[in-house]
Length: 331
Ligand SMILES: Cc1cc2nc3c(=O)[nH]c(=O)nc-3n(C[C@H](O)[C@H](O)[C@H](O)COP(=O)(O)O)c2cc1C
Image (cartoon, rainbow, N blue to C red; front, side):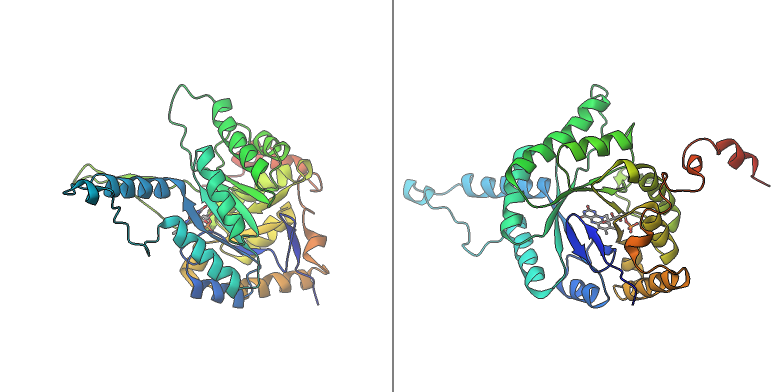
């Protein structure tokens, strides 16, 4: 029997397949189906700091700006005692998932302010999360903010949270850093337990009739996986913390490539939204078949064996074959 287990964020996972944040992991029945189909852990959808703050503001407005008749009545605050906000609902879901599933559950926070994350982070730890994922969805559009400013935002958030929380923390990054390798190294120094490469930015679209900006979400395609595989291969031997690949993993071949490049876990989202949670079983079977055919005894044996430092042609991961690639194009 081939050993599919892997170490990720200090957790022993029974295999490298981890359904990432999505509506699937936000639904208890689907989360159960994912576990039944063999998923090794799940990442819950993010708790969005901006939504919690917006809700708190609305609630304050509701409570404090009511035109009530008399002084006595004004001291009465009519918040229904069974009212549950975003944070309460998130904690409830985490609690339900933790008590129904046996696999590790990673909670996810999306936000940019330090204080917000620390408070929420502590609550997620108390509710039983096995690890925390931080998703800094930050578009650096201010011309006054240089690269260092943007990077510091991530590092400071992590460092502040790290001081308060001993749980494993991983950061989901976009590929849009001047030096991805240096950024990951800085996060490692700031005590991150892992990074998730790479977040996808959703591109807003312009409606040509109304001239309004409309939100636009497209699921990924398998073409996106190679960017992740390349960066994992490039940094694997230089970075000790856990590396997860996310973005474009739709088929077993690309999952195998990410593991060969050095990924500790491979996240799945679009493919499971398209094909359903049960597709995990098929991917695991294909992974197992490939390992058998290529005479590997375990996933750990093959992990990183085609990272840049182990590859037969390491320069191919960098610039040196650029000219060959361009010249090889045939019309
Ligand atoms: C409908 C939908 C909801 C998502 N929600 C979240 C989220 O709450 N937090 C997060 O970090 N990523 C979220 N993601 C991103 C996914 O977790 C994943 O990283 C991304 O889709 C790339 O992986 P894929 O190519 O397998 O889809 C979402 C993606 C989709 C399609």
